[in-house]
Image (cartoon, rainbow, N blue to C red):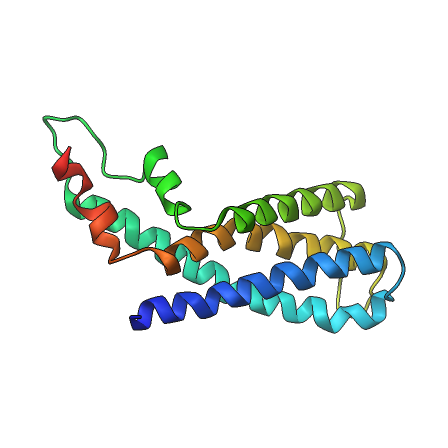
Length: 172
């Protein structure tokens, strides 16, 4: 396994842990099994964990888009070099189906929780309430649910990215 794939596996595990922890926080606080005051440090840690996940996601998708650009925009084919729908499907092709389903369910839970909570604003001197925990955790769940299938697929993709993305336009 290359260093990049090993790094992607680590970030994938971080994204999975954020997904599980944030979804559990939403459910625990909503059912009042956990107080918002005890959940506050966990929510703050979740936001710090989301940053490397999204940074890696941007790096992976940016790299794939760059490879499409390197493959070249052929003026006689009139095809742009950005990622199209087929490429986006290929981004999650190697993600196991149960994990894709779990990400969709987590995103749906996050959307329902966020819509149910409404707009929430918090300042450092303010007490942490149930609405704060649910809203902030829902945000972390949603962002990681979008990144998780892409990162999982990228870490399991056989070979190199250029094998699947870079030369694709030249073959067609």
